[in-house]
Image 1 (cartoon, rainbow, N blue to C red):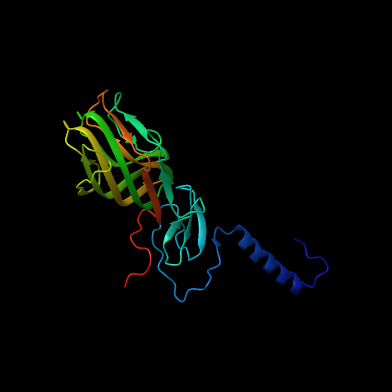
Image 2 (cartoon, rainbow, N blue to C red):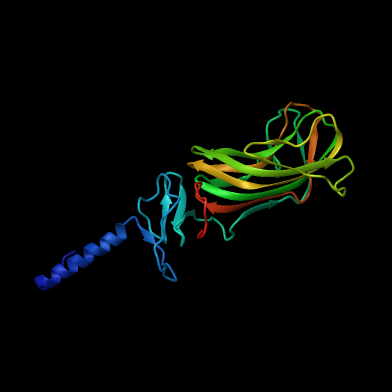
Length: 259
């Protein structure tokens, strides 16, 4: 920019101002106001591949490696920006659904279709809750297993979970109380022995899910069989619920101050 008819001293001053403004316009850093101001600077935790090397509280950026918008919160935790006005994901079934394993014994989602789940970004962690009733009429010739399944949607990622499943069944109905068994697992849990008839299952699960890598994944509670059998059709019950509460990056272990 030319500064016409200005003394040399003012030309130099305006040149410096212009240079500073250009640096602000082209800088990669975008920082949201931190209100109220923090009395101390927290240590930044949870940085992943593609994140800035030295971010500050309030910094916001798009990690193009994971295609994930992130920011640094007031505790210093690198956190994924949510895509909605709520702080959690929740699905509740408004009707029953049949699951058939006549063609394949592979995992099926217990939500609205065999592969329905929540699409989440990689490098994220979640607390989850899941509960349902499952009904089977006839002779159970398979051993069903309950678990959490993830499928890669874009790029490359993987899911791990630590879960506590409570489960029990009876031959009377859902209004009959069950004695539940509790098992901690990082994979799946068989919920009954084979050979029993007309079962009514109560299942509750909770735990932590971590998605590492890049891109996006689809997550859902699933039921798997050990063999394929055209006679086995299972029914999920109305009110089945699956809830994910975001915690932060896939490596997050603490939110808040521990002393």
